[in-house]
Length: 452
Image (cartoon, helix red, strand yellow):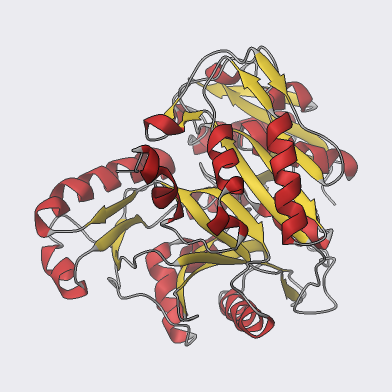
């Protein structure tokens, strides 16, 4: 196992990785921008290095600066977290060229699966259904391709995820403007402005399967996560298992995920995302070649530590789940993403100083966060404050526990999505498991707050 690992990220995910490193007896090195000097991950790491100004392009997306920090601290490996350089094949290659282990898949696997357009091609070869779309990335002259697919179409960033670089185009007149916007956002978020087109399916369920595979050929899939509750194509609440998936469908989804991982020679932790229609048909959407934000719901119902599995795989060791292809689970878990946003103003970002920060506790409650009382939110990065993860013996129990935990969670000084989550857990359709990607729009419409 490694003696020291550098975390090439910030905030909540950096704190999460540091905790597992400490449990495994591995030293941690953090990087931070000038805007993140007071961030919790800087305090928690064994050492920390400033790598540049506040703008991500000059710090967290600066490959040379991250590599230099790793060498300066004597780190043997780099954990990329999620976002920023996590799915960047050039970064993975740069690590290898500098004698550093990238805690993630190989550059080849990232190019095959992390690049969304290329992953679609692999899915077709593997016999997995996909939504209609372009075979390759598109440029400003993609009008004929959009016409062939048929409106509405979705423009999607080829090199990233997390809802960045996505635009829905419902008619031809919108295409040029939305294409430019998607490319600009993708370039800023991932350092790559490539996009492709995909048919937009109205209000499906968003289902994903976590998998892990080591260099010894062992692979395992975890029970699916339902990530249908979203705003602006970004997940707001996730749960596992999905109330819409039975054991037969679960097996099909898991085998599809593992077949892609094996075809790409994938080593590490990854996630295959699918769309599920009302008739139970599923379609491949993309592969995230990194740790997902919502990984704690999987950890809660299986007892896994997915960061630990990443480290084992990257170090050439055997994963903990080498005994079978399907990981057993117990109970039900729900994750609430608590963001610094005003949901009454179309989830507009909120900034300021956190005056009150009172976290919930008790049985079945986990909070992953980098925030503390007195912390001032920087304006340059993602709006996530915390992830509130709930476990219960069954879904009803998990929902009831969510209601209690959300009541206990107190924040002042900034606007948050706590009240939006309180609306969700009190909603009859949610309680009955009747959710899809249009859920939030329907939920907020009666209050004249429809997402536009």
